[in-house]
Image (cartoon, rainbow, N blue to C red; front, side, top):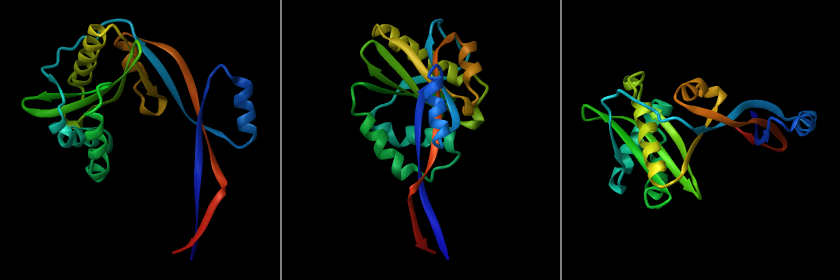
Length: 194
């Protein structure tokens, strides 16, 4: 039996670039998601009992475990993700936060810094701790770090994640949006025998 393998390419384009988007659609690209970039303008408050700590290098496996539970509901990717997290923990431009409730890890967040900005990524709460203010506690702590460093806090939200309204309700405002367009690369098809 022959199976065809192909790759796809994905690009982002500002929503305001309608002519370019039309041209890409005409050449086979299809919208697959929308990414919205938001800026924090109001302090995030949380009544959560979560304790927030800055992860140390020895915490790579625990942070990875929580990240995978929050986003993938399993640990299959741990052998691939733990070395990445370990490398991130060595970088001064990166801070990984961990929330714990009652001694159990409840959620994670990553901060990546550039000049004047602190970008928040990987805001995730382990399923059994959701709807308890854990993400808000993590965001509040990230805001405090950004403010102490004189940085603006921003983040990205994918429409497919359904988190945009959550961030808007917590004082973030939309800076801009981009469409994610994807195209199946038919020239890269390779057949293999299965």
